[in-house]
Image (tube, helix red, strand yellow):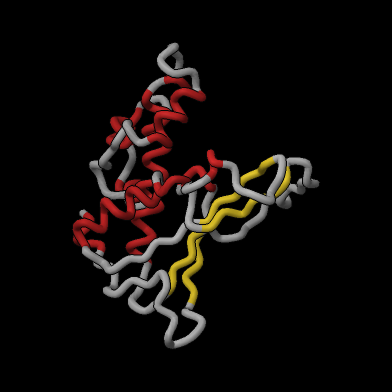
Length: 182
């Protein structure tokens, strides 16, 4: 979709549309995550990757993950979603879309995010990393790095049961009704 933007979604079949967020997808190019992405891709210098379509492609991913998180959340369940930090840092990306879609559903949501950062010293969080997420894992820049095995088939989302009957963190209080998202 980085070549055609949202207009490219008009050419996909019904089955493929069922795998993404309902159309039309709301888009806010003023979110810092999308503005920074555009800057990293060369701003307004021209070319495919520096156009608005690359950030629209990112927004389609974020909106789709948010849609399916709400669709698959169940009352009394904790929903754990693993994603790259770019999709949720500063409570943007997926988190922004969950909140937008939730305006229609009015679920009682508690969203917590986790991010990781590298710093010269992990003893005190750098000011630039403050507010990035609810929990921030800080590692030293010179720490040995490893890579996930090629072809890993770990699922991106995993619904899990609360640890105890009293655990109320990150639960949906109503079952997701996807008809309200359309």
